[in-house]
Image 1 (tube, rainbow, N blue to C red):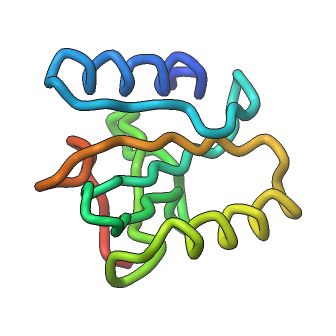
Image 2: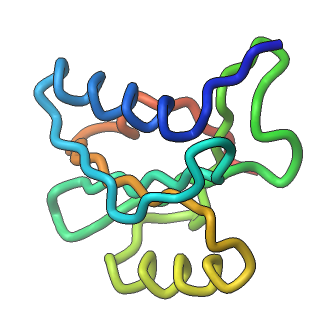
Image 3: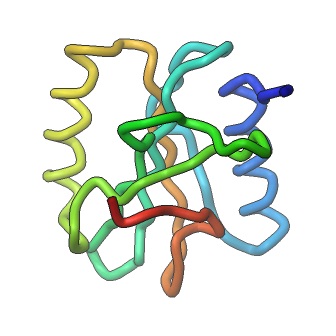
Length: 113
């Protein structure tokens, strides 16, 4: 099964945001090949949802990248920054992408695991 490299997947996400009239940006660039991707969804009301890789496989059987909500509720940017600083101590290759989406999750599918 073919999986997109992290950089290509992130570039595709940003392009999709652009075509939908949403703003997206790379906050931290990780490893091109297989860096874990975290997406901070900015709801434009000073709250965010953070989507990150699930505990199990990072891709579904069909090859789609999977996500889980890191926090059960929306949080402030400071909580996301603190969480990502801790994650970087274990994995310096991670990507952090911010997507502005007032009413959704940046078009991504996620689980509430």
